[in-house]
Length: 95
Image 1 (cartoon, rainbow, N blue to C red):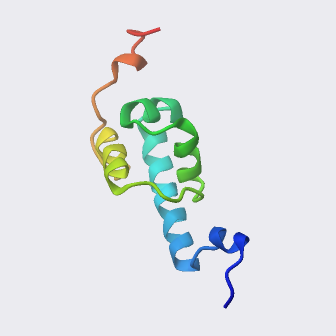
Image 2 (image 1 turned 120 degrees about the horizontal axis):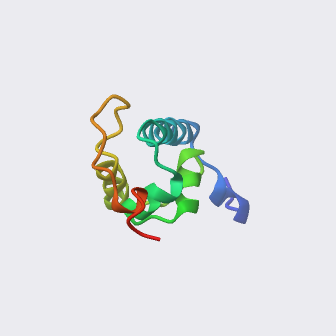
Image 3 (image 1 turned 60 degrees about the horizontal axis):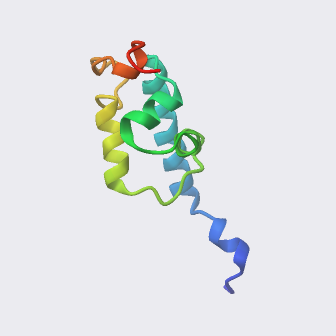
């Protein structure tokens, strides 16, 4: 199969489905703890646009270490896990 510039955007269907499932888990958890994408981005160090792409199954190239920080910031991906501590920026402490 010949390589073409557009093929770099093609993904194995199983890999794509995996990212969609991960994105759904992240979004469910984030909404369960009542954080905006911006709150999560601030807490884990990713850009808000990266959070959006992740939640929509369109993010590629995220480093595992960054993803781990995202998971830790939300205290896990289980929707029923205890909420993480309320961040200072969400309590009106920062402007």
